[in-house]
Structure formats: structure tokens, C-alpha cells
Image (cartoon, rainbow, N blue to C red):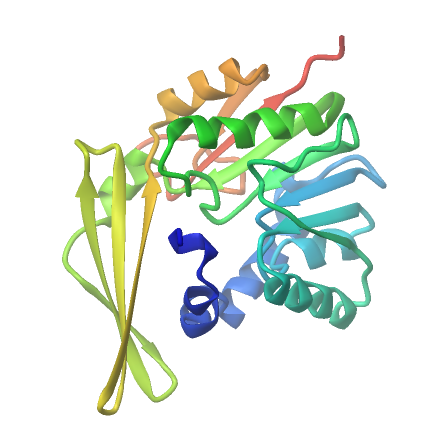
Length: 247
């Protein structure tokens, strides 16, 4: 089983992955970010939507949102988040390497470093190709992730995150000459400990520009945050956007 297929990761470490703070930050970003301001009633595909951090506020803003994820438990939580927000969205259980709906969307988003999960680079490319195939002419893909540059400024000694009744120790290891990384998490509560790990490709901005172009995107732009700031030494994320040609 691949790490992203293991529901024990997503449920067992839910307090780290799906915090109220992250949900509030996503809602604030949707409310204020110029990069997340789309044409009224846009059809939006949220790849790897998880528990709906972005699905719910995007739907509440009036977009026609479809969330796609591999895990039905996460999709149920995303649907509940939409209901709590007084919004409606559609959900599809699917692998993003396989899911595509030709020209069905005006926007595709892939948020919170949900890109690069697959050990085979070509599988990551398939995600981009599926996004391109799913966009109507003139549509846009927006990917938010830790790039090689931003990850290098963040990685270092093990980190400790407090959770109710315990803590999570996080340790990162660079693999394959900065091609991928592994994150090991240990959740400690009292006398018990649970461990998991995940691996992910880590791409530079230049590499992702080339990948977007290979997938057919044009007008490729890089930003350093969701406020639309420059991708420079002060960047905290890489937000990369590309457009599908109009014909």
C-alpha cells in the first residue's frame, strides 16, 4: 500500500493535518486572495480536496465546486464542512491520476502541497495532463505547494507540534539528490506512540514551469504567497498558475 492510500495516516494524524487554524486560513485566503478570485459561477475542480478546507469556502463564494479525493471518509468530512458553511458542492471518489472530465471546469486548484505524491514522476505529470484535459479553453490551473526552494528554507532539525494530550515529532529526510523527501511523524500520548511516514517529490519553480509547459499550459506565472507576492527569497510557498489556450 502506498502511504497516501493508508487511511490510518489521514485519521490517526488528523489533529496535525486538518487543524481548525488551517481551515480558517483557507477560508481567509478564499475571501481575500486575488489568485482565488474567479469569474462568477466558475466551475472549479478541487484536486485532492481532503476535508474540504478550500472546497467549502469556494462553494460558499458561489462557485460550482467539485471535490475529488481517494478516501470516502475525507469526502464525507468535506461534504459536512460544506453543509456547515451553508454551501453545496459535488464530490467524486477518484484517483487524480485517473480523474478527468473533458472541458468540464473553468478552474482547477490543487492546494496545500497535494501535488507530487507519486513515486513515478510520470504519474505526477498525469495529474497535470488530467487538469489540462478537464479545463475549458481559457481555463486556469492553480497549484500551491512547498517548492524545492521554500522547502530548503524550512527543513532542518526535528520539529515538535503539540496536540491535545500529547505531541507529534516531525523529522524530514532529503532523498535522491533533492528529488524527493520523506517526512516521519511520531505521535506520542502518555505511554503510547504511533508512527507514519510519507514521501513526496519536491520540485523547483523552474522544474514546475517546464512541467506545466509540457502538459500544455501557457501564461505560466509563479507567486510567493496567496496574496500574489513575488516568488523570491521571501516566498513562503510556491503558487504556480497556468492557462489553457483558447483554441
